[in-house]
Image (tube, rainbow, N blue to C red):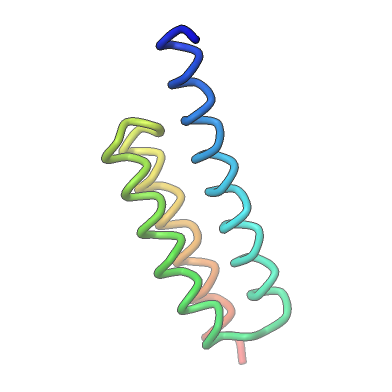
Length: 80
């Protein structure tokens, strides 16, 4: 297998796990589970940082996603 194909598969699996973590976090927010969502936000943020560190995604994208996810948690937490 070519090196680029192997890296592509590895990057795709990491991006897929990022999407799954993000969807799980959003589902917790919509369900109104603030404590679980807070724990999930920590996991999502860590995963985004690791992906940016290894070059799977750009660090600005990781920062932007983390900021928007944290803002969503803040709106849910202050709404009630």
